[in-house]
Every structure is written in C-alpha cells, then in structure tokens.
Length: 271
Length: 295
Image (tube, each protein chain N blue to C red):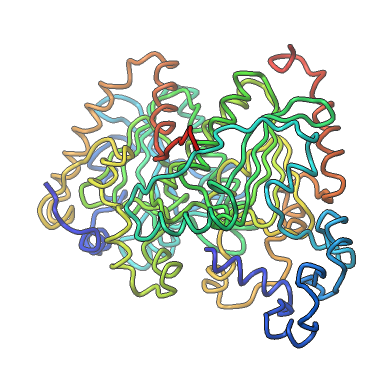
C-alpha cells in the first residue's frame, strides 16, 4: 500500500531516471513497428504509435513520449502533443479497430501543448474528436497512466474499457502547477496544490475513475523497471482475459457506463 | 483559466473597461446605473432600453455581450415552450474542496441558478428540439458533475426520442473545484454526443462568449454544425498561458470566432438577432432526411 502524499509522488514521476514508454516497449512487446503521421499535417514526436505482439496477440500501442534527456525531450516537445499527435492516435486507433486489435494507451503527459499553432490547428477539436470516437471504437482499449496525466491532453488517450495507474502516477484536471497559478496566482505552490487535488491512484479509485493500480517498487519505478514491466504485463494479461471475449455491444455498453456514472450530485425534488 | 479569460476580455476592450471610479467621474451619480449601458468594447453609451431592445448587442460596434441562459432561451425559443429537465440538481463536493459549498451557495443566491446550465425540451417555430444553454454568471459556466450530468441526460433524451439538440456553449472549461471528476465529464458528455450522432440525429452548437478549455475540447467542438456569435472568444488554452510560452503578446483577434472560422473550426458566424431564424431553418432542412430522424 502506497501512503506517499501526492507531492512526493510528483517528485517520483519527475525523477529523470523514471522509465518512459521507450523503456517499456521492448520490455512489454515483441516486434514493435512504429507508425508515423496523422495523414493530414505531420508526425508529432510527442506521441508514439505502432503495432506489436503482446504475448503473441497483435496489439496497437499508442503513448505520449516523455524524453529521457534534453535531446529526446526536444524531439517529443516534453510530451506535450499538438493536434496532429491526437489525430495520429485516432488514425491508429481506427486501424486497430479495422483489424480488431486491442489498443493499449500509455498516458504520460503534463498536458496538451499550449501554443499558437496548436490553437490554429484545433487542439480543442482534436481532443474532442478522440473522446467521442474512442467511446464507440469497436475494439478493446486499455489505458495506463505511467507518470503524469494532465488534463484533456491526457484524457485524449484515456477513453477506455479499463483505466489502470502505476502506483505513483497522478491524473488531474489540470497540472498542479496550473492549478496553483489559477487558485493562488502562484505557480510555485504546485506541491501544495498537488496535495489537495485528490489525484493519486488511490484517490481516483475512490472516485470511481481508476480501475486498477499497478504496483511500483519502493521509491518508484526507476528502482526496478523490469519488475514494473512485469507487473504491467501481468495486469494486461488479466485485462485481456476480462475483456477480449466480451461481445462488442457489451464491451461498448460497459465503456459508456464506466464514464456515464462518474459525477457527484444531488437531486432535490422538493425544492 | 478564468483569470485568463478576464484578461483577454480586458485586452480586447483596449483597456476601456469601466471601473467604478471612472464611471463616477463620467456619469453623474444621480443617474441610476441601470438606465444606461456603456459598451466595454467601444465605450459608447446608450440607453439601457435601446441596448436590451437590441438583444444586448452594442448598437454601435456590434459587441455581443454575455447574457443569461434565461434571456437566451426567451429570445431564441417559442415563448413558454420550455419544459425544463433536472431543475434542482446540485453538485456535491467530490474532492472536499475548501469553501466550495459556501461559494456555490452565494452564487446561487446572486443568480437564482442551481448550476451553470439549463437543459430541457422546447420548440422553435413549432419544431421540437432538446436544448442546453450555459450561463457564464455561474462560476464562468465551468463544467463539473452537474453540467456533465445534465448535458448527458439531455443528449440521452434526444437520442431516445429521436430529437435534434441545440447547445449554446459558454465556459471557462472544466471546473477545478471538482478535480479529476470534472475532467471525466468531458468523456461522459462526448460519449453521449457519440450515441446521438450514431443515431443519425442533428446536433447544433452555438458558441458564445467565452467557449474555452475542456468544453472546447469536448462536446462544444462536436456539433454537426458549429455556429458562433460575432467576436466571441473560442479556444483551448488560456491566452496568458500561451503568451507565457511564446514570450510575446498575441494579437487581439487571436481565438476570436472570426479567427476560428478562418482556421476551419466554425461553420458560420451568426448575429444574435438572426440566431432564431437560422436555427429554425437548419432544423427544417434536416426534417426531410431519411434514416433515424424520420418518424
């Protein structure tokens, strides 16, 4: 059981030795072929996608890319996708649907990129389209938050049949930094924000958002990446067993219901 | 995010936002405030009656000011036709956010609203339609559990009853005070849009000032037809955030309705006075189509 406060988990997920999707792909999958481009505008380095085998089953893998050093981070824009990244993800998702390949989405982003070109090319529209189309995608989708899951930019890979989180991962409506800057007009108070936002895997399990927690070793995933890969792998095996044989209508109904029931409100009939 | 919106509006107004001390100097204090409207964009002063008679659009510069959901419904749909859904739904405090209940209580008192959206069924020139209208006076119409749930139910009602739906959007984005639960409302509402869409039914979005953040990144951008009011703010990221990233000031028309149309994300810009007529025409145009929409 992980008792660390969210702010300490933030340090762990930002640790420069924390494994990223590039570390996990060779540990989790065989014969990964990377696919490029959204077919409209370009190829966004912030999102990697491709096809591979998972335990002998063909799958599509889509993920945000955290860099492990400055050079990688420049190429992946510090894991902040542009609209063409989300459109690439959607293209690969439809390709997976065509061949009934399960989709594995790995979420690891502080958020969608905030910039002039991102706005010009429809950042909002690109994310919205993913939310709508993933909801009716006729193939199983599993999303795993690896590190930071920030805002709509994370959710664009998070409409799924099951959401799992690594035990130190965080998933929030806005980055803790953004939260602090709005709430207190002081971005430096992000650690404080972190601890009141209820964004740990346990918090989100209580809120009915996170379905499964994948254990990391003491101190964080970087202390034993092989073990974490093994845990992800055994989670995915179980997730496949739970979902791959479901009739498609049932799968889609369950997916809809999973999100449909999130929300806390009262109906005061007498007032 | 909200601060960004306010600062955008202020910069767009070229610093002519009336602050109370100026007003006191310019206008004699014995003139009741509600007699005159001073346009925040062009500073033109008109009689309040002329301004309200002009659908709250500045008669001089065509600024489409923010209006309440109730005013919007009155000027758009047939009088008395609204059958409101989920009138008394209020949100809980899912992440135990400090002072959230108190804050809502005081806004409820001030606005008479229970949350930031009114949903229901109405008619427009006799044609039945499901409607959802957001009200920016309520926490900048941010989307939390109530906005998400009411919208989802409205879409589900429209799908079950094979009705078109019109949504007037206005929002600062997802409601921070409900944390990740608010984020999930984006997926929930988009899912409900997906089902309505798959049933072959018409969804029209009318974007009003301001349509931003998680609302732009979910149901607002998913209409079959996307209409915007002139000069309103539409965008994903806050202007201040972008300016912070690029370290320079953005032009005033960045993220305006006109900018979005030029970039291909808005079908048409329609003046408030013509919205009712336009919507009615569009509804009629879709009545003769085959498939699910046919009775």
